[in-house]
Length: 123
Image 1: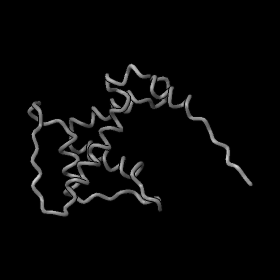
Image 2: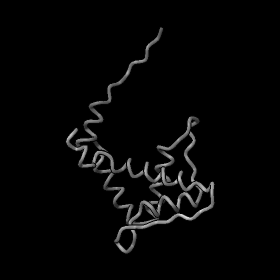
Image 3: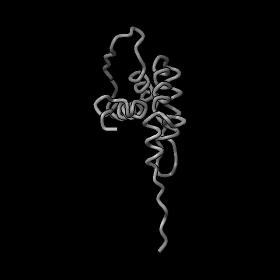
Image 4: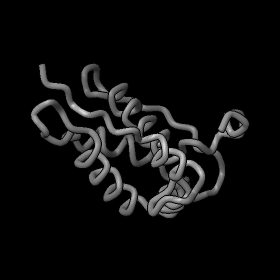
């Protein structure tokens, strides 16, 4: 019987959390915050994220419909007024509203990970 060696990634994970890695979570969060002020930059970031991280078993990137892309970009970018954004999504049944919002939550959680003050005491 052949066994595959398992690589311990704990040191890499700790370096990324602490900010000692090459592309740590603070660096990624800064990129995300810069893109949140511009719709075009957020669209590019979203497409790159889907092509890199959201792939299926056959290594194909996730393709979003234009309406889904618009929902995600408008939910992740800051409004021009600077106030809190209130959104109502009116689209036909089966258009992918819930799916788009779940992808928006995934993107947000990816870039804002390890920054919640309630879990900062755990690390």
